[in-house]
Image (cartoon, rainbow, N blue to C red; front, top):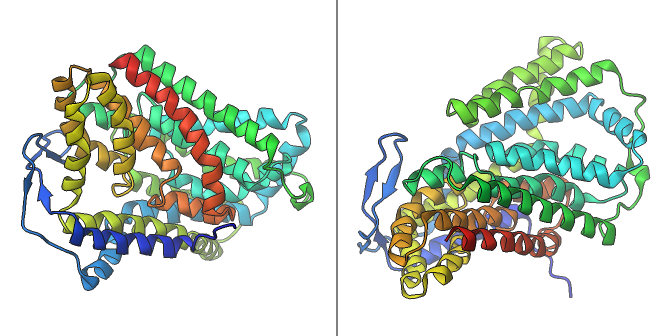
Length: 440
């Protein structure tokens, strides 16, 4: 019997309720923290865990956790609205449909297109941890996948899936590898041969899995679903360039100037109006159509806020540190390389309540790095275990609001995605496990 999972909004509200329940069950405890001078982040101090007074979260506090989570995720939510609004605006002009139709009509090698798109998103993931930005692209990606003879799952696999794999193993990804190395007190780039080898191996495995499953079962119901809105024009190409080009300065800004979501939102505020003016709309019509595009992203933006509410509730109950302590402590009693491998499922389990990879790195690496020293393994092994466990969980965890938003936009059931993504994630995790052993 096929199990029908609830709507993502209901699923996330249920996760908030479960988080509140856990604060009544799990003992409260905390690590001491210090402020990192370079980043201003609060960092845990290894070996300082202690029990504190219980602070169970009741019904009122759990409900208040939802708007507080939305406030905490305001920068990401605004990015989804502005970036998503711009792409929805572009789609409303008909330019995307015409350009996709032209691309599909010109290619006789659909698998080559899947590989090329997967590599593009994997690269963006490796460079700047691309995830939320994909929400706005889902419509055109599904359109492209159907035109190639595949279905919605393939569209997600070559975009959000490839980006997650690239982000997990990107040697310079400032939001995963970069921040994990920093808080493991290591240089920005260590064992480069192993790290770039892991990126190439992981992305290759994911693309092979995507192609294998696309050929086996993810076939579009009909290629006739492609719209026919005439031939693409030079103006269509200009409109596409307007929304693509800003990613270049953004990636440079992330890597060199510590840019974040606010800078991306600002860029796409300009992009939205540029689309309107380039498509010969006046300012009033542009503003109206831009806002209309944002309206289509409202649900996706709320999912991110709801996901943040889970961490808010667990933090209020002082149980996140207890979860970390409970997962990390048993590793000290097993042989070094075994412990290094066990760090992968430990980080994977922790990523369910701590859905932010950068937040998870700040929370766990100051603990796992000295533990690695005690076990006689390298800190690189602990970082790769974090990348493998925490990074790949972005493919499947129900507390990832961006993932649920993407699934909703593509009209792909969460259970259907899990049937595709879990085996693929396991195969990629094997690559990561090999990296842990090599680095240990």
